[in-house]
Image (cartoon, rainbow, N blue to C red; front, side, top):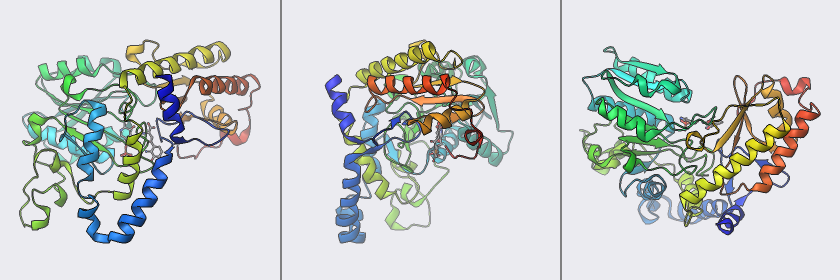
Length: 398
Ligand SMILES: Cc1ncc(COP(=O)(O)O)c(C=O)c1O
Ligand SMILES: Nc1c(O)cccc1C(=O)C[C@H](N)C(=O)O
């Protein structure tokens, strides 16, 4: 299996002199993606122009690539489609779930969820009026907060700040027992962990492709709808490409079959070409082997940093079952430390108020990278390289 990951690492462009531990925010460039996008632009956009929607299969790409992502998340063919951003897909899933449970008014989520999910839920609740509310529980109390008022549970499996992992199967069982529907946000799971939407009984799931799936900045999101619900959902974002017959240009909206109705408008064809090349890297990757390697890398980093940087406080669970594929440490000077670390060639990121965050992506990170990052972080801390006014200047985007 090590040979397999050696081979997958060689498929990425990784800049010289940089240890990249931020693939949980933006994955690196798969070498084949540059060539694939250039070829698509020249041969398809350039030569075929509008005929490429059919001749080059552009129109079917969101569903075709959805099936390939389906393999990574336990979704059967025809249940996943690509398009838009994750915030939009979360909105769509929430609106669909609320329409299926129209007798209830509560969206339940937790304070560890990514703010955009919570903003979207609040925006939708405000739009619907009629006493719809977003209830936010502490992450560790999410299960206990599920009651018979909850219409939909919106849960992001891995906390973007701490790397803490929810037990999605257990939460889903509890929610279903209380009559609620469940949406899994897989932003920090798809391509990071084994996921099984079918075995876990998710009603809806969504995730992004620019993190662990390496589709590049602006890569479209994916959405899954459980087969039993897909034909019952009335889409709130009823765009023409989710119509049963988009090119009939009918006055009336009739939702397309199954997952097709979760499409909205024109697919991002250039980004999908990059995603297609990025998905080729996953062929032959066993998700259990990926998980074993992710845990070994995160264990190695935790042990090395704790041994050499006693001022940093681990924010990520030690328990394997409770850990995603990232490691976070807290420090009051976290921002400056991360700036110094980046200047020394180790790319992680900082999440307010005090979290240093490092993503471990087994397709291209190995034990030597982890050791290199530990050594540089130890030097940044020992020599107080972070203690400079310029490293305290905020305003960076990531
Ligand atoms: C858990 C989670 N949900 C939602 C988003 C928002 O995704 P997007 O910017 O694609 O809308 C992100 C990342 O940005 C995320 O990590
Ligand atoms: N999507 C991002 C972007 O467009 C710019 C900078 C960062 C991002 C991210 O994905 C942030 C990410 N969801 C996080 O977990 O923090």
